Amino acid sequence: MPQATYHFPKGFLWGCATAAHQVEGNNTNNNWHRWEQEGHTAHKSGLACDWWGGRWREDFDRAAETGQNTHRLSIEWSRIQPEPDRWDEDALDKYRQMLRGLRERGMTPMVSLHHFTDPLWLYDNCGWEKEEAVTYFEKFVRKSVEALKEYCSLWCTINEPNIYALMGYVTGEFPACNHGVNKAMQVMANMLKGHTAAYQTIHEIQPEARVGFAWQYRPQTPRHSWSPLDQVMTKIRYAGLNIAFPTAIATGVMKSPVGNFRIPQARGTMDYLGLNYYSVDTVWFDLGNPKELFTRAGFADGADMSGTGFLANIPEGIFNMLKWAVRSFPKMPIIITENGVEDSTDKMRPRYLAQHLHQVWRAVNFNWPIKGYYHWSLIDNFEWERGWNQRFGLWALDITNQKRSKRLSADLYAEICKENGLSSEMVEKYCPEVFETLFPG
Ligand code: BGC
Image (cartoon, rainbow, N blue to C red; front, side):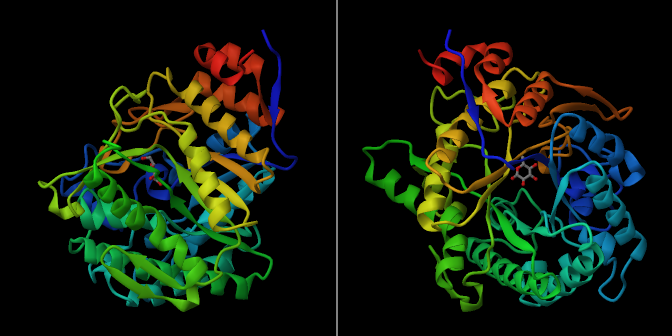
């Protein structure tokens, strides 16, 4: 049996990613809270992982003890700015404690300034549909960065503007004021302006900061490769979902299937490219789905499907994403800001993790500037409209009593982080079913 270790570069960032609303609990002043109360989600977030109650301490201990050297979390806008003209200094202080907590445990914090939720006061004014949101966001960023800069210099302005726009404004699974592809693109354009303003503000306050955004890149393939219609639909989806926003960072123009937005100030506003990868979509023409421009996305027949059918395990997709990134943004540092699978039984997660990291290692070996990997997620957390039905954690959470239990994948990830690599012994121990593909010989 071959013995080998796939090593990662020295100083590689190994951590997990979380988001405020999904872990904090009792977050009652944002649009997701209202969305939950209105019955649009499978469950309510409730106490979530009770980080606001202080359980971040024990979870940061878990992360640090298992060899993680970084953590990506988000701060909740509606807590820090409960009303347009009121700041909550206690909330900011709590975030300062959390970031100091990471530092004390030897972990580098990465802070996201927007992760899907909006304060009710902004949402009630139709949020990111209006350009006013950009000014509000810039003020919030200024206040927060001033308060937190002592502990953080790695910033993620906005998480997944594409998924925010798609799920809210197109499919309707996330809260949104109005609907339609045009609105979705308008929202993405405003978020790009928000990102740009945040980028400039952060650099003004903290010149050494590294600022980027987290982009979910989802490769799209036609269901029938021979079908011209499926091919066209795939291109449309790919352009709107994957390309429009990041390309504008290079060109100053956000080109979309429903029109172009000139945002020249966006050019060059990125110190690293943050990429979230989960799966690959199979796309086809569907006359019955006008709201998604007659496209429909699903998964390939016979794919290795996750526990609740939310994603197909397609590790080559993460490599293709990285290839797209280095070709589009040569020399730009890349950070994988999310990657993971919902799997309450932990049957797929070990192989999903090993297979994806093997692909990342392949990319690293081309000398592509990949700087880190954040697993989604540390603890089972509130999965938006899917509520508690999906379990993404390295640790399982019993929401009835806040008890955490370690899944086997947490041990695998710990070994990877501590070794700064993936070895044949690890694969043999945790996911022997993929040994031959990862270590052929
Ligand atoms: C989001 C996370 C979410 C994850 C899994 C990503 O799109 O950034 O907030 O929990 O997907 O659903």
